[in-house]
Image (tube, rainbow, N blue to C red):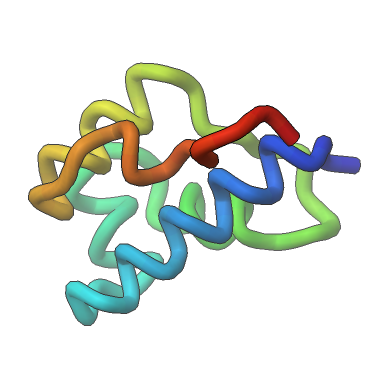
Length: 75
């Protein structure tokens, strides 16, 4: 089960990924991770999570700031 903050970040990454028209597979491959990594993170039934390094690399790929994935205020 994911926490509120984890869910929030996962949703923000998904939104940014879709804005850039990148599939889960394409983002996983650009990160150099398993083809199913992003789908596992975005799945509610899996336990995979992003770490700080993932978020930094994703921000580079999506051409945004890692801060774009975080809420303005604590949840």
